[in-house]
Structure formats: structure tokens, C-alpha cells
Image (cartoon, rainbow, N blue to C red; front, side):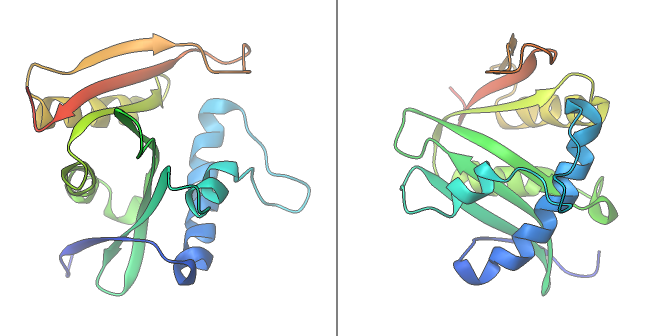
Length: 168
């Protein structure tokens, strides 16, 4: 990496870049959820739409390196006791360089309290990453549980990590 990572709340001007990053994210996820593109090559994007809505319950963030967008974080539940890292993506070219963990720390520091994140147990890299996040943010004080995927009984249950920031 030649530049320090950055994180900022996305604006409508960032939407085209996040739309393209969303396609990469959905492509990566299709391996674990059996998803295929729509006839036009796009993927479902309700969560991205919600993140850019004026509901006040969501916030989209752009992860950058210099002037390059290298990922995103979608947060929901801003008005609730527990916030959810709803969607999280870092491009493969900067994975394993600390950008992802840095971005999670930055996001949760902006809204201290209880947090949750779901991931698929079949995604071994995500399992390692999110367990590391739990341990680094709330050492010995995070939990993991399995929950059915709403309206998708055909899928294996999601894994959910829960933690508080700052820790207990």
C-alpha cells in the first residue's frame, strides 16, 4: 500500500463507485449464498438502496486508499440499541493488508455501543476475519451464534458476532 486508508461517509456522488463495488461484493458472496446475477448482469441491491435512503437508520461508508475506493461498509440500526455492520467489502488487492480491520475499528468508534455482524460459516476467510475483529475490539467479551437466514430456509444459518465498543 502506498497510501494510508481513509474512511468517510458516502455521499450521492459516491453512488456510482459503490454500485461497482457492490457488484464485486455480490460476486464474491454468490459463492456462499448461491446467488446469480439478474438478466441485466446486476445483483439485488436493496441493502445498498436502503443505505442511500433518507431513513436515518442507515449509513454508507467508503473505504479509500488515496483517491481510490477500495471498499465499503453499510451500517444499519443507527437509531437502535444495537447497530449492524450489514455489508462489508474490501477489494481483493488490499485484503490481508490490515485495511479491513482498520475500517471496522473506524466505523464502530464513530458510534460506540453494541454491534453485530453476520457472515457465512462456509466463507472461511470471513470466519477468520470476523472472529479476529471480535477478539481485537472486545478481547474475550464477544459472542458468536448461528441464526436462520430470514426467508431463506434453503441456506445454512448465518454466523453472528456480537460485541461492544468500547469493550465492557
